[in-house]
Image (cartoon, rainbow, N blue to C red; front, top):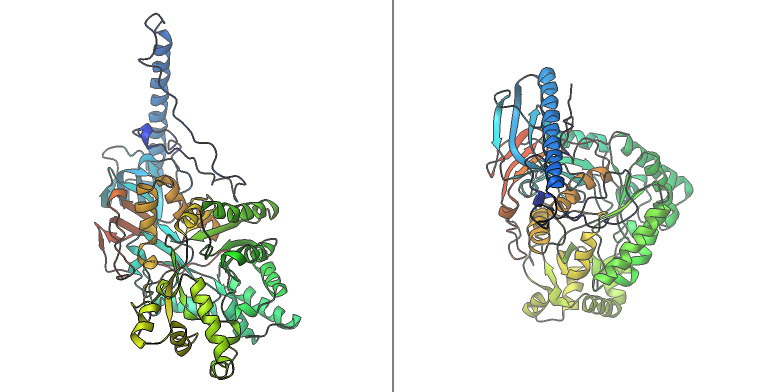
Length: 573
């Protein structure tokens, strides 16, 4: 029997300074309508501030009330632990002692112990001395204890690189793959079994890729599929949802997704909604002047299901006021599309990363034959590439991440080859390389990240030459919460735990509570370091003391362990 301590709201041993200024809006499911409520300010104590002529009796009464309240809290804690001990006994597999616990759902910390048996949290609260024995004891005094982080938009292949140490080192215990419209082009249930046999180093949830569904259904690059073809694709999506997919991902800026008409997307959204899933979308165009229309297209799908704008950004956009315009659009849809949720994720870097085809016109991409395009429309293509790259901050702002050009900017490569950069791109072709593009504004992206309905993602992988795959989650705490004070630590944790868990549909992860899975972090926030750089991106983050994954130590005393303890997750429909 699981026993929940009712004493957690009593801040015993918790200094008032630890209470954050901004209470979380999350906790009123599915999602609240407003933004942060007004800051909560501590009332000044009257003790020591009364004039000498004022009787001291009210102060004594107040002290008696406080003593009684404190005694009541301790009595409740004692009763809660006694009830747990009578049902569960003295043995535990893991005992985390004396940490500052953030549950992932609100932004209030509590001093408490955590007891784990198997892969589940069994108790959180005060533990009587000498009444518990555990195989592993972690001294968490002075440390944060919180749920493992959840990456809502990641990349990688557990069949090729199952360790995922880049995520573990950041405290990420769960990732979601099958993004941007691309998932394995085989039966998803069979593939999940293969990935499970590979023993992944983190928990993995899957989305069914829209582009993959187009390929499997035979629609491919057709811009105007028939109703029968769309229904066939909807049937494939339903099968994937039955096999545990968490929803549908779209990549409408890539082929074949860019050819999809809206009626196709709406029919698929209905399937997702029927299964209480989520659409995550790399929208049709992230350029600032096209962003609002791209969002509106996604939000129209949001009339039928939950929707999330993937790696939200405004390419070329400038400033916090522009971010507020984008957030206002999302807020309006959140009100109109109830009961469905409207959310977004953001990675904390100002350079994107994708294939070089992003700067090529649609008519130069599949199914069009590139060699014929070069022969027949060479000058038109060169002019397009030159204009496009210049609009994206010039060739200096494109940093190649794939061989043989890795580590060079487009400007450097052009200088080395002694030809204009557009000629270099023409030779490489739309499928010949991937790169980082420095096209985002710091102030705008920061303001997006502060919104209570925007969570954190990496959009990274173990092999991608971009620091976001190795540093995103640590950077949110190290830079945005502690250094810049863009939001309190509790809000940073919520954005990486409870909020993504609720959004993705994870009922037993992303929060610390009895009965939930034991994905738990122990760390000192001031010790976290994002060590990755654009010129040296494959450096692991440091500072995580313990990363507990399904009850097992994936990182112990700061060192990655040999075992791989992740699970393939399936959405329960």
